[in-house]
Image 1 (cartoon, helix red, strand yellow):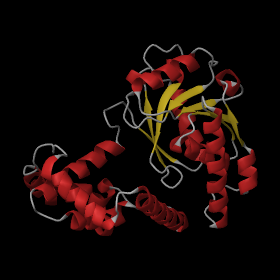
Image 2: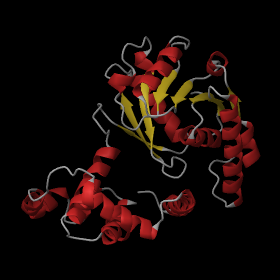
Image 3: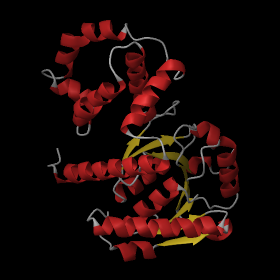
Image 4: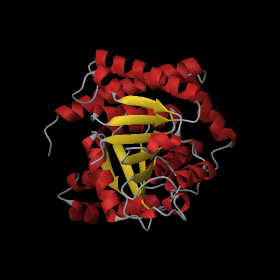
Length: 315
């Protein structure tokens, strides 16, 4: 198991990974091409970790200072890879840029290092094509914000070694995340495919004048979302009848009837986007201050849910 982790990219996702790995007791190197970016990132991490400790929400058994002592910056990639057994790429979502990063890393790593990408949508077959160490490559897609939402989607390249998946799965569990194995690559992976299905029908319902934007959000935040915070859609089906077979026998035809009425893929433009934008801005104005305050509120809510889930008896 790795004891040293390298993060390539010091933006929001890189900083979140740094905090998570440090909470699990791992030594973390944070690489970026600009020393000032590293300095800013380390200062940001210090503020966040200290605030988490003060609010009683810091993950792991180590103190804030102990965790912070595990995180260092580095602007030399050759030095950065030394001793790292897991490398997590966190650069912007640009295929050419990510391929350039992985090609560089591919030329300097050993045969026992896992190369992992944080991409939310780029396929492993695109990212890792032609790499010598392709068997050591995997996508580990976190959910924003990663410190408060533990899910990580593990998506292998067709040539990724099973041991790479197993090792990454174990590492994610060790730092308190909840990894899922995506058995083969597909556009959007799993989370975004589910998310886009919900967004698509939500958009159509507003566009067709069935429900207002605010009431649409209430259906999720005060309805489906409460249930889905603890059990998924398949277990929901299982519990809402006398098991899955009973549910499908009872509701299968009515589900198909409703599904046939779903419309085409929305354009996400025009009058509907203006209508939804205006409704959202009444609730949360789209200036940086209001958006930042609302995100902070969201993160506090997620933290509270995470605490509650940790106190629930495991089943």
